Structures are given as C-alpha cells and as structure tokens.
Image (cartoon, rainbow, N blue to C red):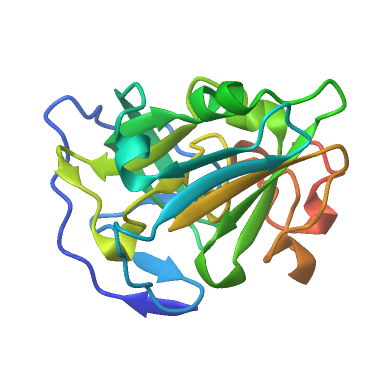
Amino acid sequence: MHVRKSPVRKPAASEPIGKPLPPGQHAAKRWPVLHQGEAPEFDPATWDFRVFGLVAQELRLDWCAFQTLPRIEQAGDLHCVTRWSVLDTRWSGVLARTVLDLAGPLPDARFAVMHGEAGYTANVPLAALRDESAILATGANGEPLEMKHGFPVRSVLPALYAWKSVKWLRAIEVTADDRPGFWESFGYSNQADPWKEQRFAEDDAREK
C-alpha cells in the first residue's frame, strides 16, 4: 500500500463542528492518499466503464457517454480502516443505481464486485450500490478528482469503510453470490460497517 502526502483539505463552510465519528476514528486535517498499486494513466480515447454479470443488458460506456449520464452532487464521508475520516466532501458524479438500472440486474442478483485498475476488487451487497448515498464520483469539492484520489471515476460508499470506495473504477460485476474482493481475501470484513467497527472478518459476527 502506497502512502503519499496530500494538500491540506479546507473544511466546507457548512461542515458541522463536532460531527459524530464512528468508533475509533479521528477527523483528518489532510486527505491522506492510500491505495494498492500505482495510479494508472488515463486515456479518454480508450477508457471505458462496464456493468456485466447477472444483468438483462451488459453495459459499456466510453468516457464521452459516461459524462452524458445524469449528474448529481452530494456530501459524503470517507472512513478509512486505518482510522482517519475525511468529512463532508462534496462529491459530484453519477448515482451508482443509475448505471445499474441501465443494465437491469436480474432477479437473482444480490451482490456486486467492483473492479478497479490493475485487478483491484471490492465486494458489496447490491443494495449498498443502490443506496442513495452511493455515487460514482468524478469530482470532489467543486474540482475534478485528482488522479491520486481515483480520477476518472471512483465509487464512494460513505456507509462503508473506504476500501470499498474503489479508486479508478472500471466495472461493476453483478452476481448472485458474495465473492471476496482484494482486501477481503486477506481477512478484511465483508460488511465493513464503520459504526460497528467491522474491520476484519472476525468482526462481522460481533454486534456493536
């Protein structure tokens, strides 16, 4: 995992003071940069985004087509399993459920595997991507995402630990069965609820 320094993040004027944090977390004064592998190169002429698996119609969008999807902007937190939290980032992009609806998950579909660059994956219940907080972000705080933060597209799932918010997202695979992603295969939690401190697999069965 590579860690790099990032510029100081200025809190939004509307950011609440003393906002509750999940257990064991602290509010970061900077937006740390952690990811598996190196940041990829981006070529808009060859980049594409797919939704495949248990869907009525597999979806493939090039960069131009992705930018024509309905856009939204909303606040969302990132809670890293390493115990820092970045609060109330203003994300801009596309609701994850928008692209799911275009593909049409089949009745047996219950889970999803998000595929990033270089083979990185993270698994979630399909319901987590249908949640109104789940966004496929292309921008943050009024600016395009920086490459180190996941440009051109990263999933943002504020209700889960941030390793589920996949940088450099290239595809969503819709499945009937749960299948461990990259960190889950090393013993990290499938559920990854920061409010229950579900950091590792043994935490999933423990009620908080």
